[in-house]
Length: 256
Image 1 (cartoon, rainbow, N blue to C red):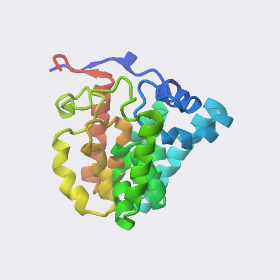
Image 2 (image 1 turned 120 degrees about the horizontal axis):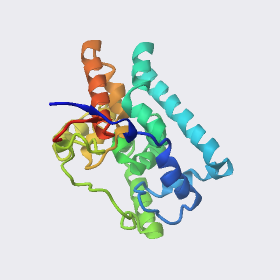
Image 3 (image 1 turned 60 degrees about the vertical axis):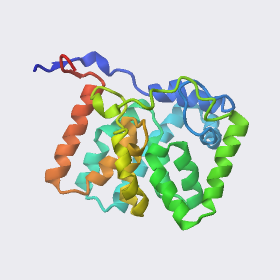
């Protein structure tokens, strides 16, 4: 089976920031097509409007790198493994597309109330942090309910979402898909997710509990697998690159 290279497949930087996130920040009261995050997230980001789209993007990029460094330190990764994580497809794709998953990962270092808010903004990134917040204080469940109810009252969210992706597609069947979820196979991980209170379990499992997870949502996976011995981590790191190349069709396998 021949593999072909297609260099024209990946050429646009910061698409998600300028096409989706910045327009939503500048007009937060209307849920724009392609936006699926809890709308309160964009109210939280309103101070960025004072800085403009480019400086705001730079701050988000810097924050993403800082969060990865900080989580790597909390997981006690060596400087070399931290470097490999920074140059892994999930982190680089998050930076390349101008995504916000690095910001959402702050949930794993934030106080419980903030962890709940961030977990609701993008659960496939930080639902583990939200679960831990509930364990610390059951009143955080009330906070989650208030956030969800108010989002429905103000924005009719999630019913106001437009052009939703094919959430319930069998993502694991298509290696060229932009959906990296293992849906529905990932559901078998729910018992482990509910029983464990370790940060690394939430980081590793969260993307696979939901029907949709983009590559940038797997930063936690890159961090946790870096704790493995090199002989296991490097093959995983390489496989992530191969899967990325298939996703953007940089590599094309005829018939796939």
